[in-house]
Amino acid sequence: MQKKEIIELLNSDGTELFAAADEVRKKYKKDEVHLRGLIEFSNICKRNCAYCGLQARNKKLERYRLLPDEIIEIAKKAANLGYKTVVLQSGEDDFYTTEIICNIVSEIKKLDMALTLSIGEKSYDEYKAYREAGADRYLLRIETTDENLYKKLHPNMSLENRKKCLYNLKKLGYETGSGTLVGIGQEVSSLADDILFFKSLDMDMVGIGPFIPHPNTPLKGEINPKNFDMALKMMAITRLVMPDINIPATTAMETINPNGRIIALQSGANVVMPNITTTKYRSKYEIYPNKICLNDAPETCRSCIEAKIRSIGRYVSDTKGYRKQ
Ligand code: 5AD
Ligand code: FES
Image (tube, rainbow, N blue to C red; front, top):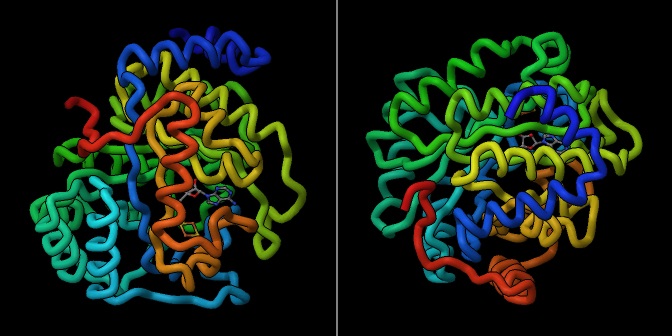
């Protein structure tokens, strides 16, 4: 697809696009939905991304950090609940040295699950060490490929380094995921560039979510409902352009639309990432306000989403759900 066509689709009402993406999803990924259990293990972050509630400058947030044993316990519980993948996500928290992360990874890999890391920008050697410890996948959204906007929103960070991280992850053989945060000031043309970027790097996973303003950040304000529609169109086009990749129905979509994940699953998505973080920490992992499932136990999230998935004629996979089976 050419950039011009992507822009046209992003400017369309989406009706035909969503139907086409659903058809392509069915052809390449069947009716299988992969569940990835998400463990938010630390909300401590040294960065100051303008849109993110975890940013270091947000002094109003009560911080927490799970110990390796606690993380491993949650992973065991996930395995017992039937999860085939766990995702370990945190702010950029230097408490977790390479050695600590590698130990956690190798312990969890004994449980016969796929393991995804989402812990930010690290050096080639760090990514290499995690990979050798057994990590299978890595998530690092590019957020925006617009260089000026990227600079404005990410103090002391660079688009160039973020890209380098993604190249390194691919090179090390990770199933690599990226994605866009839709509504942080991009032009439609730059959203089209994001999709072409994912394609050019042959990303294995792409997660797209709408921006939800956080009151304790410089980007505070009202939710723009258009971000949901635009995120959904981005996701659907990504499915058309990269038909065999894994695409999540994101939590942020459900936060601004009560049926958001189901709508996404019917517009190209084939993955859901239920939260399996211990309930008492959930409200503190406040990337954006009013996140869903704040008071729900891990068991509840699993059965809730499973029921929803079955209600639309889809089923939960019992495989690890790699891009290429
Ligand atoms: N609204 C929605 N998503 C956000 N993220 C960060 N801040 C927000 C926000 N205010 C997303 C980023 C990041 C992911 C973990 O959460 O895209 O990559
Ligand atoms: Fe932590 Fe954005 S504030 S990665």
